[in-house]
Figure (tube, rainbow, N blue to C red):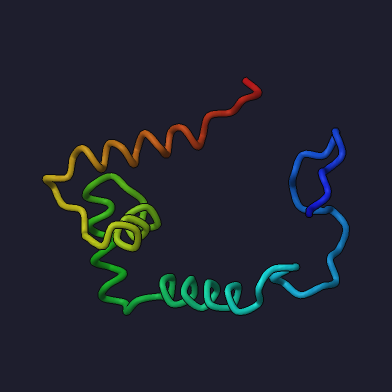
Length: 102
């Protein structure tokens, strides 16, 4: 059973240097499989593909990363008729920029 954190603990990672393996106390196979899948998904595509994605993203008013993430998550390219999804991505972008200190 895991120990409960102290009352003042925010649940984040420890601030001191960790000397153990990068997967922590979890299963190394699962960690390595996820890392390999992440690296494969975000591997840089060919130059022509990058330029095509960049052009489409700019035409829709999205960043290259937002457009690529949409392809990776949904498995489809956004087009001119996907106004609702593009607006949803833009709203999510605005929510990320909100500062709670203002």
